[in-house]
Length: 306
Length: 274
Ligand SMILES: Nc1ncnc2c1ncn2[C@@H]1O[C@H](COP(=O)(O)OP(=O)(O)OP(=O)(O)O)[C@@H](O)[C@H]1O
Ligand SMILES: [Mg+2]
Image 1 (cartoon, rainbow over the protein chains, first blue to last red):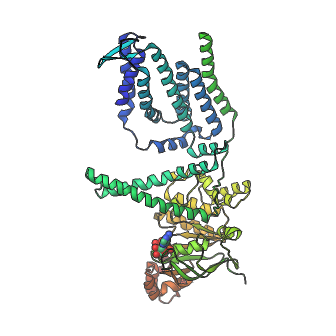
Image 2 (spheres, chains in turn red, green):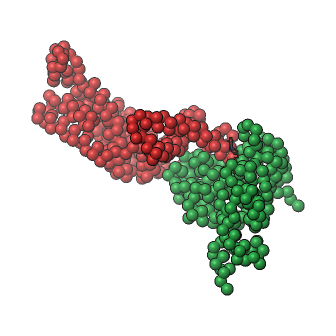
Image 3 (cartoon, chains in turn brown, purple):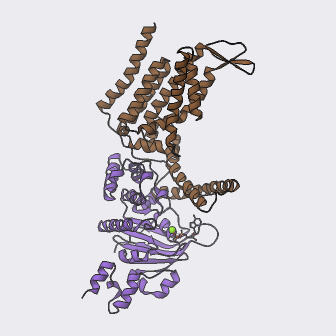
């Protein structure tokens, strides 16, 4: 709801003065409609574990992590350096296509995940777009409590650049996250010499997020079964006591897990075997094309301008 | 005569306070044995298993590996933990790796085996436990029975000679319990010594040849399983039931020695037919 409203305001703000007033309104309405649509299907509570789950299902999960990470990084750098809505749009479409068509992540999942950070992006867009001035100016001035909310033409351009850039970068990151299970990402960080302690911590956190969230949901169900959430007051105390016992059970679990690690000769260093996926020419070629297309677009645009 | 692979002599252990969880325990296991560890909740079964594997150090008494006393540190301790593997009751406590492959590799990697031997050990163990399909998946998306098989593969990959199971059937449905029994039979055929702590007396009667009864931190009796289930006074003292098949057999086949009582229902019906 908020997101649809924000989207409409931003789109209108970007279009006004450039398109005819009627067209600007239609564009705003279309944006609101688009942002409203996926909401109607309800949303899932555990998107953060869903990402991990879809990454595993992805057809791209056997592509070497290093290649995927480098490609995503290259595309983000390119987007930010080009400062061109056209290039951003191209990157956005390409990475979304890779995720949905090549990786076979369901389009609706992708859309839902993509919209999650969008509210924040749109909010910051609002701040970038509007200016407060004592006198009317810019392409539009709205009187408001004795001052004017204005949209300078220059702000329109820069907001468009920033918003499309942000959307493209988010899409790049999702292309990486939705095709690379967390452990592989962590292993890749280990290979580029992120400190070992940090890597081990990330492994353990990743592993125990699932254990603890499982315990938490069991406790919640058990409490609900005993009418623990009957009134507001009651649900407050129930939540407090669930958190306390989650803490206690985490300690017990930690000590039991430590026993289990020791029983397999753990001596202070986490060591695992890693599966290395081979680098295939096809993968390398696709990655090259993926980067080359927006790069060419950026160069052409620059030449056209200069 | 060779000394047994693992031997506990007069071992005591106290967690906190002053009631010991285990006192003056004498226990040994040798290759090819199938031992059921019986006892009610809080009897001290898990404590005994943790001492066997060296996670806990005995407060008094000593642990011997192939007749040599274990010093509770360094190479000696590593040797004990490798030779005697422990499968924990709750897979969530044991599972650690981010994928099944890295999970199974944890033990052999800790033993410092060369890379290619780790790869082979992981693949053999996964094949033996029928989890090869899941090697590249994270363990959290597996079912309870599959997690159990992965935790057993963890130990197989360390090439242990004795495997201790802490209540392996506790979280399994009947179908998975049957699968586990098949697994145990396979491991037995490979000549491994197996010790299983359990509350399930019917399972113990089907599977074990020897039983150890623990109660209140003491080992009450250690002997052939048919002798233990024949001893009503012992069973009631330890808070254990008699397997139904065993009780019925006592009534129906008074002429048979208890060792020849049927162990499974099929066996039993066959015996009833003329
Ligand atoms: N980590 C611990 N800290 C303190 N006391 C413990 C701990 N673990 C076990 N105990 C105590 O030691 C005694 C023996 O426990 P143990 O876990 O060995 O029993 P068990 O036979 O395995 O029981 P169960 O069938 O319930 O698993 C119990 O009285 C228990 O309360
Ligand atoms: Mg126990």
